[in-house]
Image (cartoon, rainbow, N blue to C red):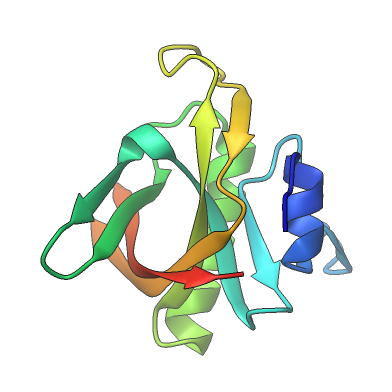
Length: 140
């Protein structure tokens, strides 16, 4: 499955979120970084490739999925909602997929490409104001 855009990746994951009135809607690929994947039945997030680390022994990837230092309060609030959902409803289980930035120093960043053949499924880890997911690669 070759997915060339964020909107197609969110669609492939059957990802949804909720509006301010609590109504379900599709994830907005332009300014939302997470949602609930109906396909996987867990929350799913984006992770910038340069904010991931691969452990050769466990074969797991740890990815930063939320930081209070990020400049978009809307994005952080959306992330926190789905992180809390994972912690309460899924025992901390969630997923992420990896995206690449055009320029890692830009703010805001722009997506240059998406790793669309797999997601990483694992557990949420909170460290101060940062939240990570440590997951194992799972084909889509």
